[in-house]
Length: 273
Image 1 (cartoon, one colour):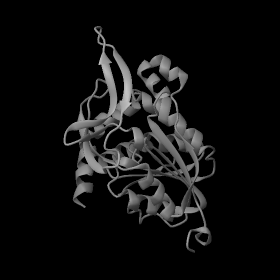
Image 2 (cartoon, helix red, strand yellow; image 1 turned 30 degrees about the horizontal axis):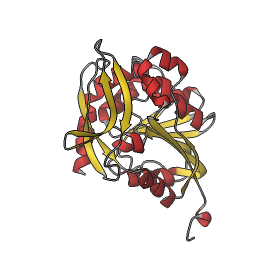
Image 3 (cartoon, helix red, strand yellow; image 1 turned 180 degrees about the horizontal axis):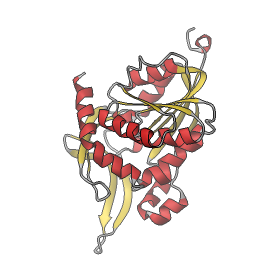
Image 4 (spheres, helix red, strand yellow; image 1 turned 180 degrees about the vertical axis):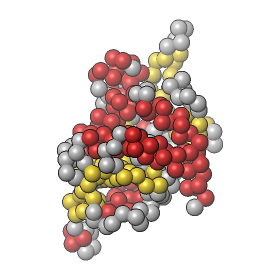
């Protein structure tokens, strides 16, 4: 799939910058908003088999391995998986990593995992329907899939190089930013877009491809694959994070992310069976 190859090349090119960004602790959304929300929703993993979908350089694979899980991580980027494996060689936690398209997990047995999670990666996956179907296949009955994603209703989006959704900002004379309101436009128009990762917390900038889909797209695909939503969260940042990084305060007003827990039900309970 040509689009997958584009995505793979993009993340391979940005891998070194991304690894340093994550491992330096400068990803404060991960530290003070999305990461804590993921850990709350996943809960106790001791003795569980856990799959990290879109694991990147392995940050959360290591987190849950330290919590007592048997973890497998998959990602489309060879460079990111190599960074994860290098860390595993230096500090072994028993995590297994595979280079794989999330929509083709043939190396993993059906109904063999207790929990799967995907942290901020589902909207970067071209075949999200195939990825969700594969997660359903590898989960045991009553296994859980936890998704942390940029909120589909409030995601910063671009079409034809123009920003169509995002915060409207007023700059002060001192360069400070006042976040006035969140503008939403063309929500129902599905599309792909390129995003340039460019800020002073990254060693170098790089570009990736993302996909805007609606909330109903994700919910209906989960349901179609026997994954019933059992919990939902629109998390707020930790108070400590807001003190250290004041721009996070705006997410007390408008959520940045959405956390979904979907539980696999038996075939006999699915609609039409």
